[in-house]
Image (cartoon, rainbow, N blue to C red; front, side, top):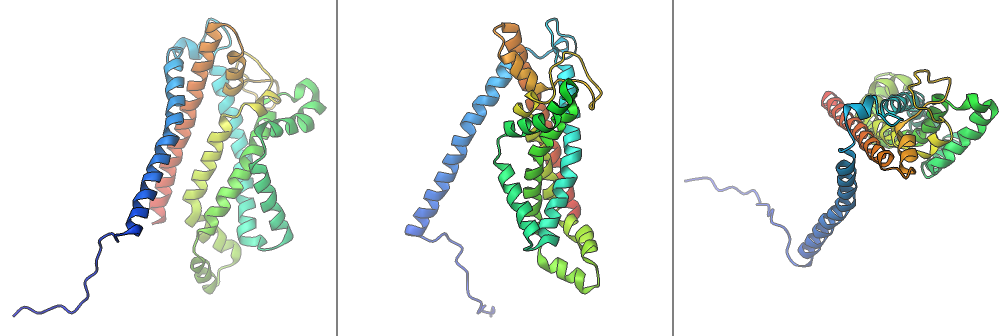
Length: 292
């Protein structure tokens, strides 16, 4: 005779009545919100691709018959954004580590956290005016340079990196820290070898998202980099150009050719942002696999 199991059975069916109706309503609202968000985003991307693809060509990128061409702007964008990331990413991570691991409830940690939260909501044009006031004006025309643009973009990246890194550090379980302390490790060693590796995927993703956002900012660059039509490989001296400022300049022109170049430059900038986001996904997935 077969043995009869005394273990209770678990009913995995969805509960009925009002609870089931609420679940279905919430699911419908979430799907509806997702569709509503996709509509304007899809329209913007479709419009940029439809109008920008007609202007994209090798001549458009390298030697446009009606200046300025786009390649100097691409080079300027990559240089300015890369140097801004070199300044903002280490400072942002160090600031978040201080707030989450060392500062505790001290007045300095509260001040840094408060200022980071305030700076997240500051319009980008304010950052441009700030760098224009403290860096460009005292140096006159020599103050217009890629370095000034990098400083403005770094000011935009910094609070985003601090906030995203701090939130990732908070997700690291405390028992990992306590186990390391129990083995005699110092706080700095625990932070470097346990906490940061556990949160590295989120830190990398947040930092690259901040870089992608800063790469498309226009207002700070209008006050800091000037305007030229040729490539300036010296980031620390002389005016330069970038894709956001070139989009702005061409979009104001009444000529059809200039407007086409503006759409082409916009598509190029979106392509760069998508590449950065794609790299962020790959790096995040790789770090997550190694963390396991």
